[in-house]
Figure 1 (cartoon, each protein chain N blue to C red):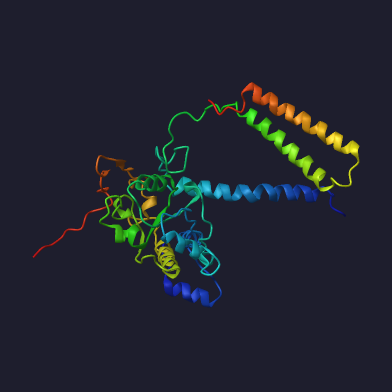
Figure 2 (cartoon, chains in turn orange, cyan):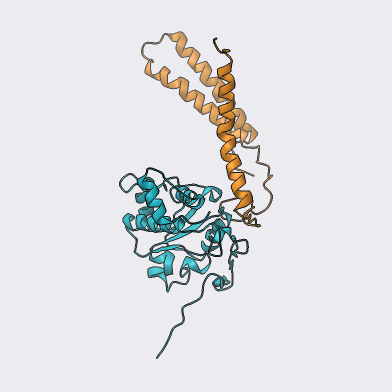
Length: 124
Length: 206
């Protein structure tokens, strides 16, 4: 008689459950009968870096840094496209040159907008 | 949990029967998996790192698992000069370790302040605040010395009793698991030493 093909899965689940539960039960039994609990204010403290925490952990971060992220993006994208353009510069037709100039113009426009808005001022 | 008669045990071993007790099994497991707390204070820490690295290989003794959290550590290796600025943090980390916990004072500074003993900012031995199990002299001690201290600690753990009046400190309900953390005073740490664990040596003048 062949065993049920799902029998192995049942055995597998049983072993998978017993493997973590038996050590946990042993540890619990040990703690219950031998090891006296010794809790304390320091021991139960949340942070474990040795320094007492000061103030609230729920603080807000400044969201104004998104402007720097945008300006960084301008120069970053510019560099990504300009490097391959500069490498292949001599073999490019006039159309590609105009296209990259338009692209540069768009980015410069963004920079001018940010400048005019006062984003480049190191304030706050 | 009663002690096994040594003669009976050797007789049984000769017949191929291995007898042990709960206590021996427990201590055997504990002494071979001592997880140190991962922190270093000064130059002794370099020697501690060398001990953990492949040349000296503390893994042979089951102590290679340096834990970055005091909750998971069994052993605190005070490796280096303990400044008075650092002492409260050391004691607090010791308090946060789970029992049973052990301390190795590594090097002259951790024992007594070492060459900086006269310094205004150096603690004259970490044993002023927490109980130390093994002291290693040296400036800094060689990795072999740390391994020797590790083996001494293993021997100490192996001899700890689980029951009776002489049972291990962490099993006694009246023994504290936390020690008071010193505060920064006007001139010194307050208190300057924990009287429960440290008695200053009496100088006898003739």
